[in-house]
Length: 397
Ligand SMILES: Nc1nc2c(ncn2[C@@H]2O[C@H](COP(=O)(O)OP(=O)(O)OP(=O)(O)O)[C@@H](O)[C@H]2O)c(=O)[nH]1
Ligand SMILES: [Mg+2]
Image (cartoon, helix red, strand yellow):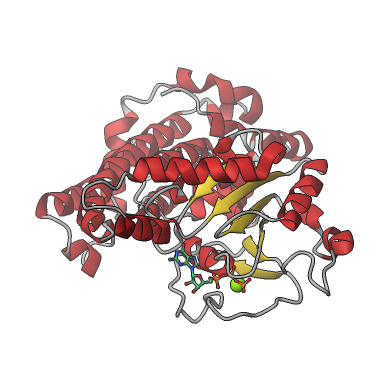
């Protein structure tokens, strides 16, 4: 059980609090911190020419159909007069900004950057469905001056595949070769603006599980500051991207929170629970384990999604995830003996011996770690089954 990089995200914050207040009310402080992943603002600018698929992308990454009430309007020619924010469905602090076209009458290139306030975005996605144009280049140049990341997105790859297939004799279509050709063309078109083709993404908004949509999702995560990344990762749906990589990243973030839950549990559980050798905050643990389940995409037992799973996957979901106080108490008891307080000496300088040096901290830590691994195992089975089921849907004729 090594320490994880994510543990360090809030370390400085906690240090600041402890320096100022000691460990009084630290339990409340941790509980607030654990909720705080929803409060970090992440702004992602979406720009490019009209009809390139900007609104469609916003809908796809938000997991919305174009006809959903909250979806961005697709297919109508509408000239936005100002940047329009779209909330992430699970996290209101993540905003995708549909920017107006560059170089129009109301937004000449000279004043565009000030008008849309380019300094407030964390990353820029520049879209085209054909080739990048003069104004796209100029925007990219300005963005690089303020040291922000930008990516070039070539949409409608599904149309290229379809058209190319149709134009070739049966059996002779080579998808890889076609993608390489498009990539090389974009690269040539962009010239010195992109130093590496990794920043070019070939996607279809209508097939977010195919081509490079998922790589783009990850690239967005990678440019964000760490604490912002945590927020975005926790708000992205594992099931939507059907990605084991996303699952792994989420587990990493969740592992990084365990020390804070353990601290809050140790600080709160000064009153022992009858019959339990070690005092822990069972309610807090149930809340965190429930959070694991929703974060890693496990369906509720009894739901339609659950009923559609294969019997052995259902069994895993049911068996591996304690949800009641009695079940969690059982897990805690199982781990109370195994918990080794020595492993957590790294937290003692920060939290003191009373919290980090006690059995409560160690037991909570061990029990949650164990539960998270079990939830991950069940989530992986659910994911593999879902990926398998949808494989047919993803095939394009
Ligand atoms: N086949 C295919 N069609 C797409 C894709 N992305 C967008 N479209 C279609 O392209 C048209 C324009 O898409 P929008 O998302 O409205 O484009 P936009 O960039 O928001 O356009 P403006 O708002 O006018 O600037 C719509 O008919 C979409 O359904 C894609 O990846 N594949
Ligand atoms: Mg649009």
